[in-house]
Length: 392
Ligand SMILES: Cc1ncc(COP(=O)(O)O)c(C=O)c1O
Image (cartoon, rainbow, N blue to C red; front, side, top):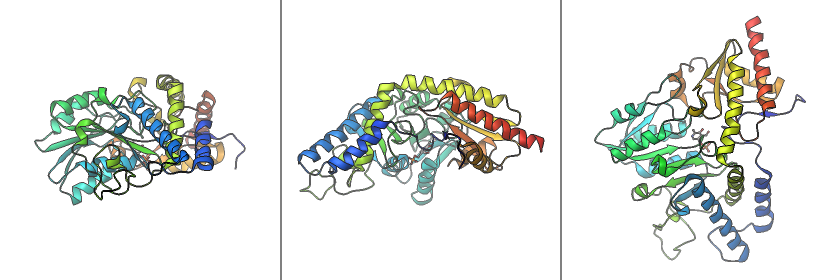
């Protein structure tokens, strides 16, 4: 292994490192508490219950949800989207979505299309990867039930005009599901300003929780239609064999991943202390530096918006003469610059961008811990490698 310092630019997959407080919270839970949540009433179990409630409250504050009970814990962003889509859609329903989506949205929708008589319209995007709200409006049919859209792209970093789309949903009395995996923690997210009825996200990306954490916001209009996809023990109303109706128990069957939720609580506290606006500013400064550096290298093409207000710190590129996967391997082995290559679970977007035939793109994704030195190391490495091909 090279003795260069590790330059982690794969924060869109999961954030690393986590704040020290996250490691400490998990360690304390595992060694000293170790009790389940919501099931028993001894002192450690009560303390665990308080920690879970605290994470729920911090999550609700982060996205301006009406109450903490509307925040449903899941195991990851995919699990949250599956609960939203399978819990809501019925035969005959029509959904408007886009080609920008991640497979965690595309595949459940494809499954429902194939097996449950749900119809799906997939709207295209412009060259930056941004969807036009007018195209969404034009796709609405009398049977449309849901608009399901990604907020920030995990391929190009493009932010969608989600508030305009929320207004369209409201005007047509449709529900709006937002995939906020790449936006929450990076940009301010307000479910009420967006008019989102359901908002799905992992806890392990910008919110700094560990892998195995995720959540779904269930708004007042969605609640009456969203059926639980799992039933089972909730620790409440144990005298009944019928799933409780109250939130969050209705959608939270089985023992929680308590270490992950406790870690997520510490992560959320870190994000609140740093402030999302300050985190955004830090990432924008680094993203601008990265985009400027990349644009000065011949043989590199950058995908996604150039305006900092239209994007997050996820940058997709191709380098002439380099298959993305091979480039990622050399970046890691020779330079310790760690990125992701390929389709990033977004096959339709790569077709739309024209990057499918060459095997996708190389993705550099920034996070709270990245520094100007990290950006400069990546630019230097890519300058070398782009020149190598140009020279050969
Ligand atoms: C846009 C988007 N949606 C959904 C997901 C799925 O999240 P998870 O990996 O937590 O299931 C991801 C993960 O990369 C993502 O980038």
